[in-house]
Image 1: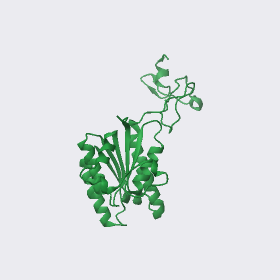
Image 2: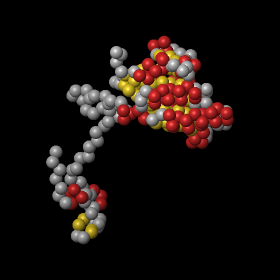
Image 3: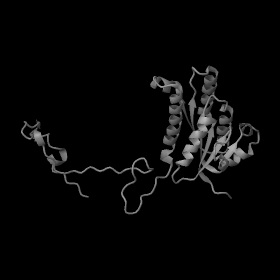
Image 4: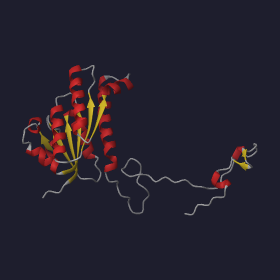
Length: 236
């Protein structure tokens, strides 16, 4: 029997496929399989699994069932409004049928560019909220409002980053951290590990305020830190 992967990433539409590929490349230690749904394969895409949207919608959908069966967690990334809505929902329903956790992060297109596409995306997102275990919709109209001075190409790049970073954030608690290298300190921030912070409780001087009248309360000088004022000792 084939080893079960920790994560199955399925990307729909150009933006969803790019986000899925970026997630796979930065997976840093967890088993992941990348599946690109619909469209042409990118450079080097022959190394990835590929699903035609029409194949997803077939009643049997055996290839899709096998893909879902091999993962412990299925993650869907998509830019809605480009005709992938029905296929995306079909995958979410198949995950539910197979009792596989399904997380989805999708973008909702700019309403000014295509009203019909936005309405289709909104409808699909409402269904996705019911069919998946977790669905996050990123409203690109909100992005345009927050970045009013950005031209269309810059907004498209910002939308791609938003989709990628939100998906990565959703997955972060579920991914193993990188182990420390023997003899070295904590993993640097942003490299998969959490930095352990520490605070040295040393005797503190009032510095330039030593000549000022102290802040007295019930006979105690509250300019002195509590641990120092009360003589608290911390054993290491």
